[in-house]
Length: 502
Image (cartoon, rainbow, N blue to C red; front, side, top):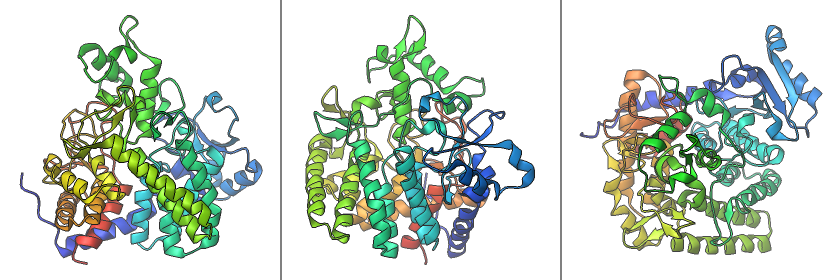
């Protein structure tokens, strides 16, 4: 298929206008608690419960919340303290955040971990500095009161985080404001979050690399409730059926499926939860259905942690802490060496994820191969080799996540806004400006074509047919294409700013 035409100036203006006004409709907070508490991922009869950390004054928070909702709805809302034993929660609900934040859209009606960074970039482009600052502050609040930047602020997400982008959010706000007092208050929480990823079970001590690892057990409640097909089968039913009926070479199926009992194993549920912490839910990147993710050190996670080390060095320099800055700079050098030692494949000219058990790479091309370019880890020669493989991913609508069609949404033929942005950033960093421009223009053109028909931006797109129509193309997980959509809005706005008519 020929790439669609880049939108004309009037269409670019319409896209920018859509993005600017949609931030308000996607904003949640204490003043819009009922908009936030609605959870499409739980059964319709689930209660309206807000959980508040025990470190907060429950009465004061309750009064603050009730003052902002209509009197007729107040009896429906329960405000409770979060139990100390989180696995004792039987009725799931929203986790309290004190300020305003922007949700992705559709069924994702809460504050999401890695979505928040891309949304924050979009807010800054739209001139919404205070809302972007509030986004960073809510992420910091989660680290302080819930232990990490959560996958999202619902109780069933308390066992896992999301790809770590907090330091970049903080850095963006500091660059925009120059507020050293704010940075000084944020710094200890950024460091605390860094160490969430750099101790077991996330850290593999033999390699010094980190992995994704949900801390919970059993089926994820939101998956049981919402990820069902037209026949009523849950995602787990479909996974079990696939493992039962298909030969798999990626891993030992007995680790994940008990044939005698016809049940998924405990490790299967941990793997499923952990691939959700990765944000790539699901692909075949870490073995079929990503179930083997806990045995992988991923390119994406370890590159993000290097970026966090770089930002921490900068923060300490800014705050006059040269010894601490040198500590983090040394960490950066060590991380660069590890990334190239474990992930770089000289024969293929790509960065691949590393299987910790087999002590070898899985040669599964995926767009995270561009992340070491984005982070400045690659040499110029390595960058040229990666760019030489661009045709593996390039389609009329931009870059598809991988060349493999698997029936999973983070593989071909799907294009995702954040992966376009980091690839374009990486290409521009190494001087591949024409390639970066072409990818951005193809992606924006595809989104604009769909926008003319639907009037909304979507979560993901089919890069081969240049459409947001995904009907019948996804077999696992949720099968919808959500409107809104936070990170798509942000990336389109950024690409229009860089490559559009102005």
